[in-house]
Length: 367
Image (cartoon, rainbow, N blue to C red; front, side, top):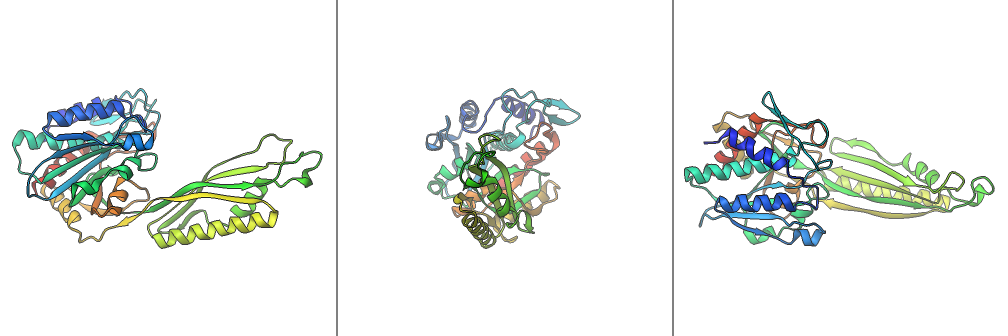
């Protein structure tokens, strides 16, 4: 039922359509036409307008009155560079030509969903009511799923296709994440004539950084300063420094304690030096943890067995739209697509993985 040539054709067509975050219009229009041709009721919401993008979430519904309602979702945007993607098919692998990402994150997920819908239509398969969501701006903060009014659809289970790894891997745990800027405001002065009249913001930041927890805090928690910016000239005592900070944890309690401790240290050190501390770090998305006996996991495990795939649960260190849907009360899992070395110029995906994933989705809807 699943057709490899068709999956590859659709995937190659989509990755060639540039779709950086907040600029998904071209791929959105492409997907609207595909979903309509497959007989779904198609709408576009106002997520683009809300988030300053040129395309909203694309939503398709395949009705099945009185049946359970399943959500299948993947995101449309890709990280840069993605302006001119030239995919290469070689030895069963689709890869980037080395000048851009491939875009398998997440057009591999989209391709599998489209193939599932093709198989349903061609074979007139019985199916649950299917709600398809192709979200915008996932890569820059899950913006599309946050804006999506999923409550309107009364979804029973969610299947999000957005994890690296081989099909069969089921992400059932993912962390909460906090991100934002920590700013230290010192005082400028001439570095050669009167440095003692200034307060070097970088010096203050350095003292605080030696006291906070960074890197792998514990098995569930990480903390990182990724970008440091500030200063005006070598002859001026640095008046301000900004630190781009993030922290993640599978435990909401641990994340909150880590943030509280980090902010207190910066406050204390700034006070000691006479500097000012400004904190613009916020929790960006909540984590989730599903028990292994959840029905949504059982559904995927059963589908894997039917096509001789090894189904296994795992936790992730990253967030996805799955975090948002779980926070809105929809039991949801993030399924591995097969994409490898994502967000790099060496990204690739195996054709077999695209096929296996599509087969799995067909078995999920067959029940």
